[in-house]
Length: 502
Image (cartoon, rainbow, N blue to C red; front, side):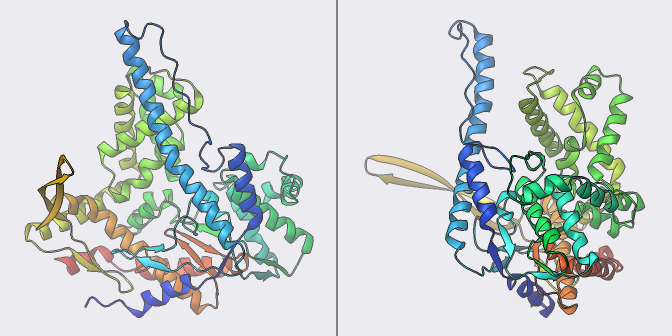
């Protein structure tokens, strides 16, 4: 049957019935930073990067001309990307201004073919860019009556600053040690530079304001700040549970530990070890340049969603160019291919060492997809709580259309589906789509939301692998996440998948 189960409908309705409101203080702060040209928290620079100075002998020196063109092309590409980012910023602020007068805002959702939910309103919503999300609050707060109710605010302050890889006790200690600065920021003294150094400056300011008011008010303070409860690279977590892989489970915090694990650092440490044991001169250069968790973050994060060696090298190039641009130090010169390729391949091998279960799981799903496409069967399966997924990627024929506008003739090439399935697209997209179907409203998220509803929780937001809740509900939501995870992944889902599609 292709009918959605009532569990999916109830989960979506619960999330989109949560009322939101504009945090006008944070909106005004974002505006001020934008006007001042402060590139904080993803805000784009207000001015374009300047092109490099042309060499005096550019007309006669071919090598100098070639090098200048390479540098200028990078600046042009960067400035073009700023245009779309600036437009997003302006539209987000425009919507925030228009909606500020309303007490309640709602975000109706739509589901894609995998069961992932997306708000229909554009630009400003709980799944927006960091500075846009910081401008939103839950419209109806909840009183914090106990220490357990107040505890999540401490964690939110530390997390938004960037102290999110320490123990919970260490995070609370950091907040207490920095209480004076946090209260200054919370009272509106933004001359204190602590907030500018935060990983998410605007969300950090919002958290400082909330906890400062709580300290002033004491028991009974009504908090409306959405508290983020994040998964640790959820795609990798899911694969570790699907294949019962203890190494990947430890790296992705599926298995309890005193200190949160960081899979990106796990992979970075493997990369460093491989470079240290390598005789290639590039290895020493890369080690001196600096390898850390940011080096391997995007590659590791995207592995469950179709990362290939080629895309791994591409993401490595982006990281290297970004690091060079920020540091102003380029020990590799203009020819970047060799260091990028060498480092990208090393990262690819290291990812396999840490989360090999993900690669094995992806190979299994690709194998199933290959059998289906070879037999001209459209891949389809049912998610754990009843969302029917149908994945069909077709090949295209190119159709040429000749037209005339005035005296000018124009030939257009259009792509048209031809009814035959694309095996390449199915193999590339299958693993990612299967994982998304498990983490969306048809799987873990949907089941978690329904458990929260059954436990008398009134308001929730959802950003794929992140749940947004009130501080007073945090402990209940945390318990529901764990219960839902055990319920779903105690089943042999890969066997169910194979039996359902083959």
